[in-house]
Length: 274
Image 1 (tube, rainbow, N blue to C red):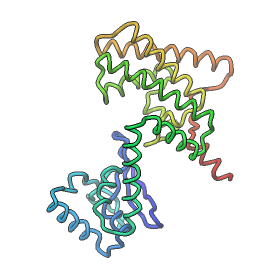
Image 2 (cartoon, rainbow, N blue to C red):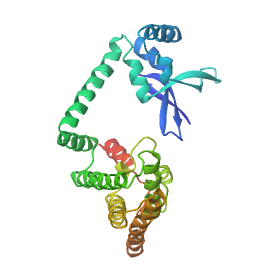
Image 3 (tube, rainbow, N blue to C red):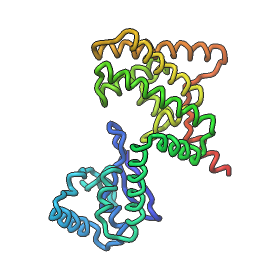
Image 4 (cartoon, helix red, strand yellow):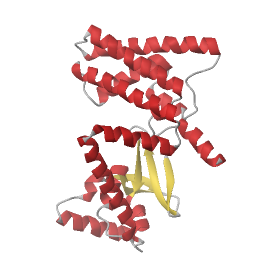
């Protein structure tokens, strides 16, 4: 999937990698925007050469992807993910790049503050959600869901479940059992890409997801699984309990709980109306 991002009315070509759930951006397009160079390809070539002399190869954080050019044909182009792009921007000596550098310094400072005092991270998270337009009630629910999720991942860690892929497999198992959809299918239903699925759930969706994860945690603590396969079975059991609750609620209300409506869409509609 390809797309065009606008940056100060200038186009930056981008590609969405479905399997990685990651956007990749054309490096030369970004360089053209930030430097206003008449030859961004040459600028990028010289920049890589300069950084190599300093001991870092910028090309190692890029991938050659085929992106459509102005003539309608696709050519192999150096592209970088958001993380890679921010690293590249740090090497661009341009006034237009300074806001990004200042922002990175600010984010880095805030992250160090949060490591020293985790409560600051919670306060900052709540402030961020409220600024985006979420209600206080929803934010409190969301923060509770983070606590429930942390309890679950702590339990998985205690049972020897590996972070990354194994966590993702178990999460998928829980989600399918309570909602009837895999995480990927759920995100597709709500038309999400990089956005967090839980950030786009209704209060009831969040509650059922929390019930599924909290139940899985409690069963795991009692059963004390010794293998990943056993943990997967428990994840299904926890999700199924919440899934049965979902079906009962839907039978009583006549309404589907798992909805294509996302908070992102609701907030966009609200902002347009205002």
